[in-house]
Image (tube, rainbow, N blue to C red):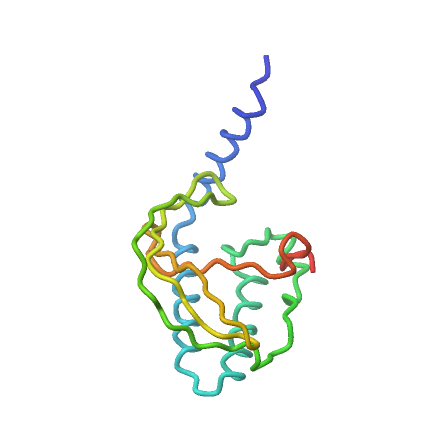
Length: 162
């Protein structure tokens, strides 16, 4: 007797999780490289050069690192992610406005969810419009700011399907 689709999916998720847990050294390396990259980008006074460096290193990581979201076959075919051209009109400095904390769980594409706390909004002007985004603090993993947003490409294209 075969198991239900739900049980098979749960078992596959557990296997994927076990595989990830066995490969902690490469995850540690991925996180170190990404953290280093963000430090380099913040330290670069030339914003365009910082953006170009970010693109180049991200492409290198996604195309070659074992913790890439691409599997080995995808990494072998990978050339680069499609990006919009650099445009200073889409740079903004936001004011962080404290808000009453709101706890929430946000599902992942894997097997679980992460707990976040909405703690502020980022308020800014972009192309003559006053806008704001909710700021969430990731309570697990390694902490950090999560700033979700949408644009007209939502549901239409992704990095892997432009």
